[in-house]
Amino acid sequence: MPKQALLCYEPVAQPWGAGLRKICAVQGLRFRAVERADLSRTVGALAEGRKAPEGAGEHPALPEPVLVFCGVGSAQLDRLLQALRKLGLPRTCLKAVLTGENAGWTFSQLYEELTRERSALSRKE
Image (cartoon, rainbow, N blue to C red; front, top):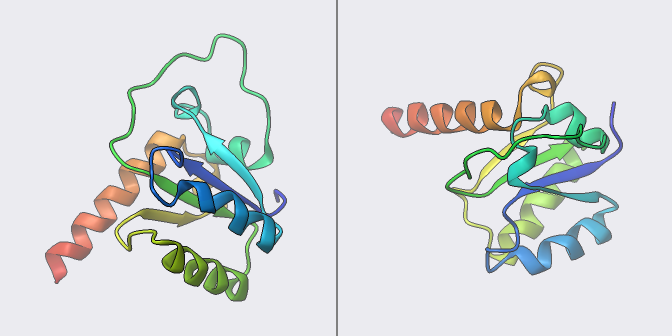
């Protein structure tokens, strides 16, 4: 299991991006920025901080930010989410917790699943 970390796609372009690293430092999490070149890598490899293989290709950009909490317990996750809300992170920002199942997915596959889940939830409302 990877050490506690937060994977974040596109933090720099967001108004709350600058404060995200500070929250990670206070919470004892490693901050790992996910770049476009990382979108075809597995979530587990990104969480563990493994280096990208040579020649990893560019992937189309995702249209929105995504956060993945790795190795975080429920009490710490609650504290993190509260700190992120205070920071101004929109509730609609896609968020996930690393699991045994999604660790083998590419970051793009995780994004696709999160958007499907969001669509399903909005249809229920």
